[in-house]
Image (cartoon, rainbow, N blue to C red; front, side, top):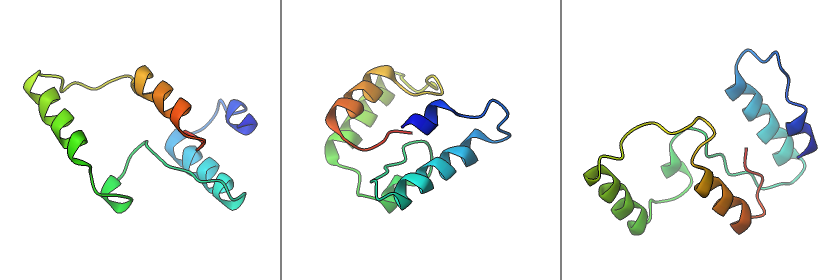
Length: 87
């Protein structure tokens, strides 16, 4: 992950840089699960408990955007639960 810390200050499109970093990791044989955008159904079917949590959040009006880095508690849990590189 050392090259992530050296991220360019002059990137025109950070998403393109993320894609490039993910590709470099894949070429090194690392498993990369990209959570930044796209269609997750390409990777897996949405589990029932996630659908239920989504419906619950909608009912509680939790429909606003979060920080661009994501939800801290979720990022923390993913980091502890996987050995994959989270971009």
